[in-house]
Image 1 (cartoon, rainbow, N blue to C red):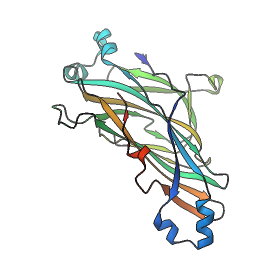
Image 2: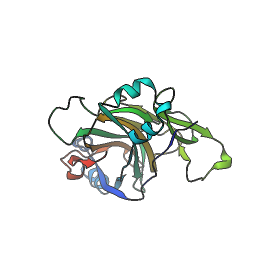
Image 3: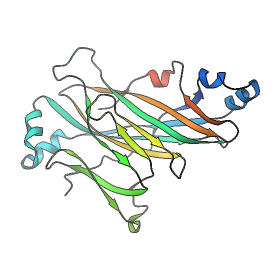
Image 4: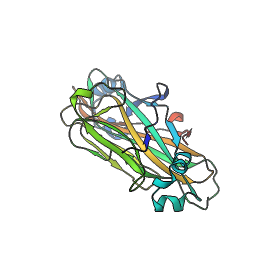
Length: 242
């Protein structure tokens, strides 16, 4: 049984960037090919993160708090965070690989007694086949996301999420979690949702710095790595998270 629902999704966009080829990719191309590639518009946008603290909910359900979590509540807070990333390829391209990452930073530069914020849990961890899920937060036997696969009869329901392969998470229990997406049968496009349980020192403010990289299949030029290779103010900036 789920002890808490997922935080609701936001319809607001945080920022939008155009991904560009790096110098290494450009050096391998002729001048005309470079002009063609620079004319492509492959964009990625990040949705406004939604966060919900779990301490109040945990205390309200004290009988359900796992002992290891109960022991940490004097020093740490736990927040669930809902993230989204939307891929908009150029008409002549398709995304075949992408990485979406978020670096968790404390607003205060002073070293906190509890250390850095970390991704205590993540979803999805691994998606190998297309499926849709419904989920929430479970407190027992451990604090974690709890998602179940649901059938076609609930397709399109507002509380279900469809995932396509392949997606693999990294950075669990670290301050820089990420997800790698790879095309299997269907190109990477449209909106993707990701979930974090953030463990942070009590009373601190966590900021996020987003990291994006990708590779596209260009119908004329083959596979090309993309990213933001200079200092982009949108990706250098930090954003309030939880």
